[in-house]
Length: 493
Image (cartoon, rainbow, N blue to C red):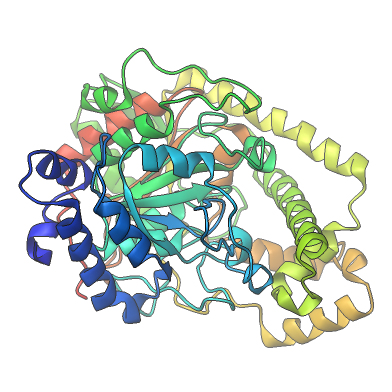
């Protein structure tokens, strides 16, 4: 099976030709490996090849809706027994998973053939994929630009045609941001729908979730059916499934929807004209399809939401660093400076302040729910501008020097209360201010690749749905995909 034939199929299509006996799982796998080897040196998308493991599995009898389809895992929270899971950090270089994550078991039960793990920023804490441990991942559409993060390796691999769909996760935009950067479809499921087990009840109070990034809507829909096929009886709760499959929901007409849209950053920071143009184009397309679209946004404090999100995100980083040091003996220098600064600042957070911030999540959820009483969906840019250039979000050298000094003097806590710290945090979040709302509120959201910049870079738009709105989002996405196809677009690698 040569690459030109392999690239014609999405995951559902590959599974169909394997099931008909037109091609073997081994032949499909070798086509994926050949593509990975051919473009890997340019992209650095796959940081853990598992070729022999995959070849052995491809030679067995495989069953399930995706039997024989090559697949990649994200190297964060997606454990494969006997393989390292490093989370993009030098501190976990020696960590080997003792068993499969629940989500990985779902994928294996579906017949997927895992042949590698993809790059991610350290512990998934950034919107770019440039970890010190495993190096920079680049955007297949322009190698000078980021594929986004934290599922940047997976997005780069899908956009480059290595696989049609890959494992991803999203705690603040980490599915939607790289999907938007790479011209792909990215659905973040709502809170509690997918398992975080067995080592976690839920990540980040349920704000973080597993998922995939794909070229086609039907792949994401069918994958969601796979990922929710069996309940996790050890999980904290059981989330209701829709009456029909997600694959069936994606094939349905969404009907006439009422959609509110905004292009204003919730942080009050600038939004690039290309991001505005992306939403304007989506509004025109939606209107032509018969939907009612008008300017509207939830009534909430966007900067307060960002502050609460980042404070608690920092506490998660602090807990992660402490646990790794306790269990592995990792040294301070095994963690990146930005991670240490974030964790150091978070250690000064009082428990009462943490609880108060978490309680305010309810305020944002209620505000978004009030919005959804009037509108079916919220439309925003996925990003505040085109994918940034590699290194654009690096901490300035003077701040790196200052950060090391602050950490040595144990002043990270007081530093976090200064205007300098606040401005730096806002600067890092300004390129991606739209995605955290869906995480904090636990609502499903998706990035749809409807726009290209004047320079040829992809730039998606985001739709945020109500509780249990995954079926509605998939239905609309399939309608948009039919009207404005994107899956056949290939980067000039």
